[in-house]
Length: 355
Image (cartoon, rainbow, N blue to C red; front, side, top):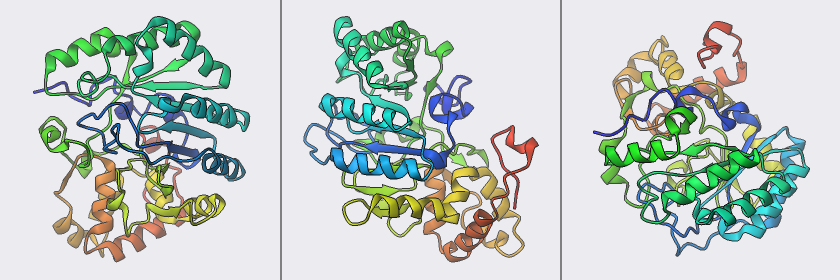
């Protein structure tokens, strides 16, 4: 048994923290590279030191500039490990800040091995305009990155006034989990904790550690925003695996930067009614709507009504790949076009009203 991921200070469950201060439709996550100096077992992108795929500076700048014109206001740089090319990262942070974005970045924290380097790097990030840093700290990173590196970075961010929110994923050893939580004061500080996706370097050994939930229990919509892979593939979902094959044939796959303009891809995302619904409505709501739909309810109940999922992303992919897809997608698109999110009572609970 391990520490539950749905504790009271998990930002994902609370819909709190820097990344939740912005609605999904204004957000972009760039996976700058699949290269990483670690190869963590749970890594959804299967990143490791041998990967070489990366986005170019011009590709990122093109999306940032088109995004401003179309209402994007939040950008996050991730990977792989974006700090392996720190000059590129710093330049992109500066450019995004100059365009008016709220700018965040993930990191495995390898560069925090000394307090002095942590101090210099955080100062450079703040000067360039970074608004928030999201370092990872869990048992999967410890074979590669010492916990002291994360402590140095969090300490320096606090000292210099840079928002710092930790990504923590529970592991197989509850005592080690407790040590990490205590070392970083995460029980009081709060942390992000993603659900498991069934892709990764060694994911099958982790399955028993993660909640496997009914759709009725899935309220998170945090992954439902634009993500761009190091190959230039653009998705309406940020849970991007190494090859992205799970998105083929679904509305989440929007196209590729190396074949179409950033403007066209961004417009496609914003104009897709199914994605409009996914950005706003939780799996719990969609499950309830479909279950009670007079035409689809019985078939939906037999096909997916009692299915369990590790994440909201898996729920949506199951819908798009089920035999009911043509009918379900038509109904979802119709609801998305109506854009009726006005129920104030349900909005307070992170829900939206049924169209």
